[in-house]
Structure formats: structure tokens, C-alpha cells
Length: 134
Image (cartoon, rainbow, N blue to C red):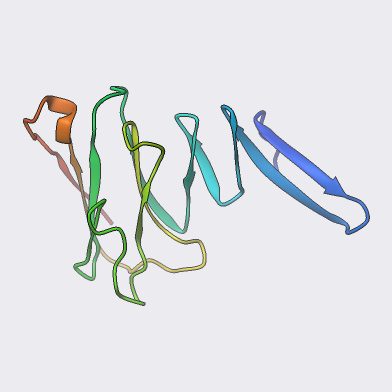
């Protein structure tokens, strides 16, 4: 295991265990989380994360999975056991958006279509780019 500058490790010599956390601004992230813009977000076997600099703007990631499920803030989970992607509301939703598959789940194989909706970032004019990941 490597130690990062913002990592804290606590050892319990009685139980012979340790716990490691990431220091993320004033927060402490768990090992299944990542630090983005001083916010802890879920990371998993696959994740798509968007961040932007405008503090009072709203943006959204929209992911279409290979099984044709769409995941976004309005549909945060699929109803399929074969496709367990999840949307996570991060903080107040004004600078980071995250969609992930839990670490103990395998995401479907195939092409993913990822769209970032600019929402209010462009004052109501939506020029959302679409990306495809394989």
C-alpha cells in the first residue's frame, strides 16, 4: 500500500488491523471514496465524474449503459440486477456530479454513452457534448 500526502492511517495493535482514510479539505473520505473538489465521492469498479468551476452553476452527467439503461439525477438507479450503476448527489450538486458502479458489482460490458448537460452553466442554453466510452 502506498501512502498519499493526504492519507491518514490508524493502527490497532490489539486487533492487528488498520484503517486508512483520505483527508479531503475538512472532510475525511473512506477507502471506497475519492476526493474531488474537497468533497468525498463514491468510487467503484467503474465511475464517471464531472466537475466544473462555476460555483452557482448546475450540470449533470447522463449515462446510457450497454443494457440501454439511463442513469442521471432524475433516475439515480437502474432496476436491473445485471446493471447496478448509481447516481450520487455530491454536496449541493453545484460543482461535482458522479455516476458509479459499486466495487462489489461488475458493470455491463460494451459501449457507454456519456452526456454532460450544462443545465444552468450556460444560462439556460444547453450545448451538451456527448461522449462514448468503451
